[in-house]
Figure (cartoon, rainbow, N blue to C red):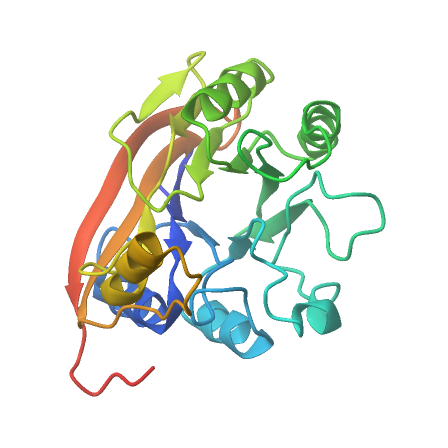
Length: 272
C-alpha cells in the first residue's frame, strides 16, 4: 500500500492443477510490486470442475485472500460439507434463498476492509434469481462499513455484463470484473470516474488447451456431438490472466486498471 491507495489483484477462472500451480509460480515471482489484496475465481480449480476443500486450502496458502465462483461451484459434492465454514469463499448472490454459502463478504487485511460480491448473469444461462435488487442491497450494506467494493460478474453475455457494470458503477462500486468465458477481453476502463471494469478477466490455466481443457476431447465433442469426458489440458505452458486495480482506500474510487496476461512455464514433473 502506497499513501492512500491500495493495489487489488483479480485473477480470472482457475482451471485445474495447471492453473493452481501457475498461480503459485506467478505469485512467488512477484518481488517489488506485490498486490495488497488478491481475489480469484475458483469455480473450476479442482480438475476443471468445482472446488475441493483441499484445493481451497492450497490456494489460500499461496496468498489469495478471497475466492469468487459461479455456476460450477457445486460440481464437487464435498462443497456442501464445507462452504458454510469457508470464510474466504463466496458463491453467486442470486441463488435461491437458503442455498448454502454466502453471496458477499467483507474481509479485513492490514486494517483495511474490502467488500466482495459474486453475481451470476442470466442471459444464455440457467434462470437464476434476478441479481439487481439483492446486489444493490449488498452494496449498501458493505458501504456502511467500507467504501471498497468489488464484484465478480459470472456471465456469458457481454452486453449483460456491461449493463450490470454501468448500473452498479453509479452506486460507487470500486471494481467490476467479468468471468466465465475464460477469454480475456481488451476493454478495461473506468466507469463513472470510480469503477474499474473489464468484460472478462480471462483464466489461469493451460495455454495450449481450449479454455483450459484438453483439445482432443473438446473437438471430438463438437464433431460427434457426444458429450465425452473433458480433461484439463496439461502442456506445461500456462497463462495467468487478470487485472490489477489501484484504488483510493478512503473514497473507494478506482484510480487505474491494468490487464495481466503472463505466460508461465511449469516444471516437467506435474502430474494431474
